[in-house]
Figure 1: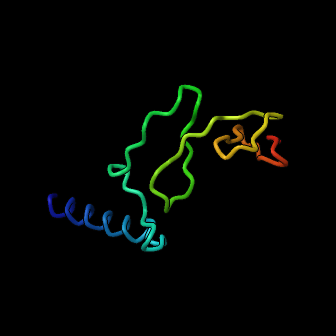
Figure 2: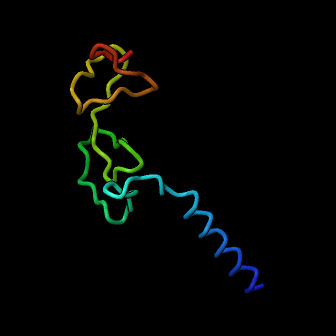
Amino acid sequence: MKLFLAIFLLTACVCAVIAGEDDCPPENPPCDPLLCAIPGCAPNSVLKKRDPCDCCESCYTPKKQGENCGDPRFACIDGLRCKNDVCV
């Protein structure tokens, strides 16, 4: 039973490495969440991942339909996109 468990864990680790984010360029390695501490967001802000190869998440102020999203610190939510500085 222990041998089976050891083989299973080894296979899982190898598969995780192969399926991991090894496509990232060397200068921008995949994020290790333990090495990337994020200061607390403001109460009305949300965390949004910018890029799987970019370690740190950023705080964005969520914006709803019709609201201005022209500032890079703003992010449209609910599946909306920013078009001409307005969430649509």
